[in-house]
Amino acid sequence: MTDRISFHDFSGAAPIPAELLRRTESDLTPYLERVAPIIERVRQEGDDALRHFARQFDKVTQPDLALKVTEAEIDAAMEAMDPEILDSMRYAIANIRRFHEAQKPEESWMIEVRPGIWAGDRTIPIESVACYVPRGKGCFPSVVAMTAIPGMVAGVQRLVIITPPAPDGSVDAGTLAAARLIGVTDIYKSGGAQAVAAIAYGTQTIPACDKIVGPGSPYVVAAKRLLSDRLDPGVPAGPSESIILTDDSVDPVLAALDLIIESEHGPDSSAWLVTSSRRVAEGVMEALPLHWAAMEPGRAAFSRAVLCGAHGGVLLTDTMEAAIAFTNAYAPEHLEILTADPMADLGRIRHAGEVLLGSSTPVTLGNYVLGPNAVLPTNRAARTHSPLSVHDFTKRMSFARVAQNAYPEAARHAERLAQYEQFPGHARAVSTARPQPTPGSDHMPLPGANMPTS
Image (cartoon, rainbow, N blue to C red; front, side):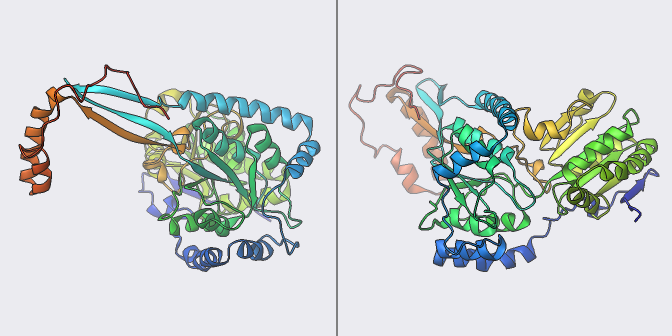
């Protein structure tokens, strides 16, 4: 069978069509229709609905599936893990924790905006957050680390993991081991749209949470959208996507290796090689089948489906400027720059979830061990959204205080503006109708004194 890798030749400066920017989640209409009844059944029936959908979608054979993972299950998972894998998990967890600890903002700050007028912010952890860890096409302890560690660093009071069960009702050992190493103890067995609904409404077993984070299928993305009035859906993280951006300096065999990385997640992924070099474009297409032949057949089939389909392949431009313009328009989740001067080209990138620079920084390292978060915005959301971070597990509360001697001037200006906007109640509250406080009764502390803390 000949692999017909999708090849788009725009070397003649032809305009690149907008449809190449589309991902599998671009049109959620069919998914929204399918998940709506699932959400409603979970809302009405709680645990019973989750067990029903576990049997229907996850092929669970246990009629009375225990939805919460026990300590004994986690102990057994730790015993089952290869010590070398645990050692690599600890290495990754330490790097991820260190990076996110450096992100943690000040608990509180304030400035004197004018003499006697003080204003500031408090940073407060969100009370409850669920980390969604997918399983459908594999097991992902790396997602446990990327979602749970920033929540732990932020100080979230109730941090839970929710993940699909296997047919025998178990959770994969890697996910449970990662949770134990990180310190998360509340883990629940549910996946897909039904899991999102459980977190939004709560069930007899699973507590409702304020927010959900983590990547998922279009079904998960659709459920998050429908439930966004009850639940903060977090970073828009759907199926995996990447761009490998190259000039003529790269070895095509290496570029082909890195193009495969995100394409092997599943047929709903998106992956492009974008280059101004015909030599590289042709060399990558020659190298891909050789790499596929050396891979596990299932993952190779996923990669073929992406790179021979509508959402991936090789795109040749006439100039690097055109290649970079397409990259910015695409706003990929993962961007790997394989050029003669990656740092210089970094300055030309405006839209990407993460940027990995040079031939020694493949996406694989970013996904597992470098420290920055690998839960990234997809479907062009990188134009306005950032990677998952400690900030996603916190909220800010502004505060202000006005000293008595600064009040008259501030009130005069506020009264004028309130009258202009035709709010007489606003204006009267700062007019001469306001009773004057007893002198000295509203003492203003020095900067930094009595600062609120979380």
